[in-house]
Each structure stands twice: as structure tokens, then as C-alpha cells.
Length: 179
Image 1 (spheres, rainbow, N blue to C red):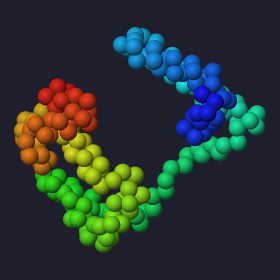
Image 2: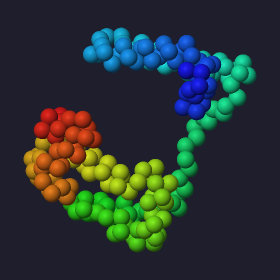
Image 3: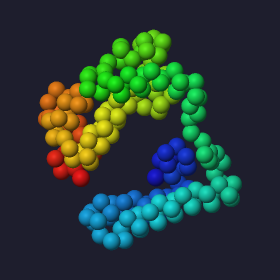
Image 4: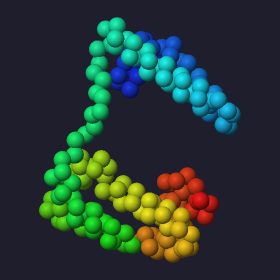
């Protein structure tokens, strides 16, 4: 564990005992099949790791930076440029949307478009489209008005089987069992 930096934050040798306790708790929770108290114990072990890191920082043994409240800044301008993209995707969910169709709408070269989109939104255009389709599918299923076949058509899937596979991959449950 001494050579293993905890996600590049803290040398493993500084928090070895706490991490080993957490790893054991995690393994136990994986085997427990949801026994009461295991999730709480796992959270407590994780909190012990975090508390140890904070303690080391306070003692001056860890000099990393704690970046509270920081996230990649997305400028309003970046998102403004992408508004036509968001509208286009929403209007064309029933089709197969290609990157080559989206880049010109933003006035950006296809080569630069994916990195620009990811920087502004946090995920690639393909991931965004997939996420939107899965969220829309979930909403349709909650309404209980449509069949899986209808929903797959609404979202541009070639057949219900392909849609069901994508849905199960995203939600870990097939659409027929989704409540």
C-alpha cells in the first residue's frame, strides 16, 4: 500500500490502516447481500479515511490542496454556442444523430467539436445523446402509456431489442421490469 497513492491524493503509507479497514468493509458489504448495518459501516470506514487525510493535512504531514467547491468552470458563452445543438438533439431524438450534423450548427469544425462539447458540458456529444434518450425512455415508462416497441421508435432505435439492451445497460434493469 505504501507505493499506492490514494487517487493521487495521499501516499498510501500515510493512511494504510484506514484504507485496509475500508477495503475489508467493502469486501464484506459485497458478500453480505444487503444485511442491515453493512452500508452504514462501509460509510463509517470511508469517513475514517477522509478524517485521517484531514488530520494529516492539519498536522502538516500532507501538503496537498483541498479544492472545496471547485468544478470545471463552464462559461455561459460555451453553453450559448451549444444551444442550437441541444435543440437539434431534442428535436431529432427519433433519428440517428451524427457528429457531422452537429458541428456545423455550432459553427465549429468537426475535429474541434467533440472536445469543445466535452469541455462545456462535461461529457461527449454521444454520451449526452445516450443520456437524453435514456432519461426520455424512463419518463415514457413512468407514464405507462407506451409499449417498449413504441418507445424504441420514439427514440430512434431500429428495434425494441436494441433499445432494451441499451436501456438495461444504462439502468441495470430491462424496460419491461422498470417501475
